[in-house]
Image (cartoon, rainbow, N blue to C red; front, side):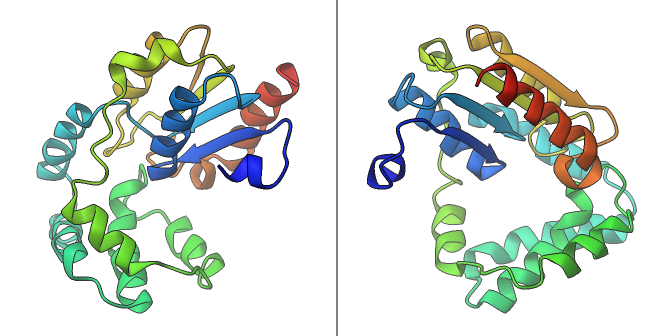
Length: 203
């Protein structure tokens, strides 16, 4: 694993969105190796994704609903980094609490140099995005764990985060009340403060 290759004796893992699945799996497969685990905007079981379709059905405005749905349909055929970047642009309104939030454009400008991997997206789109199923193993997590969620997350809903926190022994839960999926963009100061406090208390 990466930490071993780098010779790290002590490290923390923070994963957001799909990275949250990686952080969860790492905490379960290597219990206690991470000094702290932070799971941001994730779920512990694919069953929670049933909410996505329901949330899309009521997503407004309608033109953005159609835009998001069309972008998901294109994921299996994405070929270039430019295609991938365009998909992200089309999907972001669904991932913010307010679909017309001006910070969407600001974030896209700040991350314009992002290197995307279309081959990876095609693979995981075809494979059901990894099929995360660790809900029945959460009690195996031994490291101090912080679970983060946005109250208005339409993808990885807050109830999934609450259930995750209930299943992880001694874990902490922080729900950002003015955020969707992009908590670190929508409430950056509070996000950093919560993470810093957790890391310092479990240093």
